[in-house]
Length: 68
Image (cartoon, rainbow, N blue to C red; front, side, top):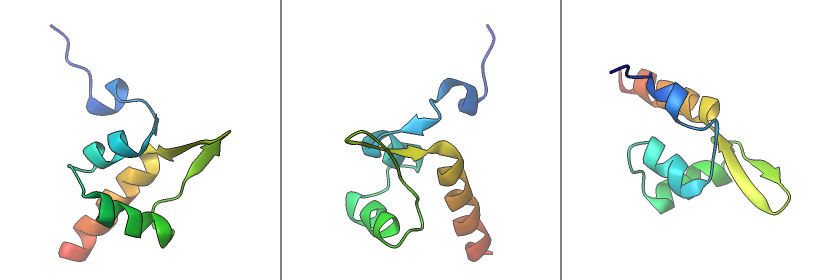
């Protein structure tokens, strides 16, 4: 059985629930705070709001660096 890397099985654009899950189950309040402060950029397509997985990966890297 071939196991694909996580980034090849997860869509690039995620809606909020999937983005929060991707970030390890981040709470709605914490996610909203990051979104409102511009830490997590949004992409609007029509009325839908999406989050780019690459931006979420950068957030993870930033949080990791701050913990060191």
